[in-house]
Length: 116
Image (cartoon, rainbow, N blue to C red; front, side):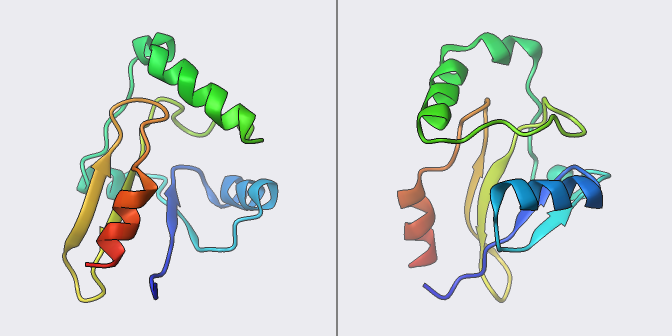
């Protein structure tokens, strides 16, 4: 659809390099050791109680069934993520801020935002 994909992680360059080698991703992987991007888009952190949520167990089971494995813990294992689509000239087309582990944006929503 003509979009560029990038990921932002909390680790340092060596962690990002190991993650890239483990996962085989080919898109840009940026590092944000000071969490500036995380704060700018309002991403949240989980509490220990999130580990016990049923949704977390379901997400882990889905990931494991799909052949995914957790990599080593990063700088802050309680940092939650998000998914965003930004317009080339600026502006937000879509934002999903994760409320707990495994709370990922529906792929249909991301693709719909790309088409807008």
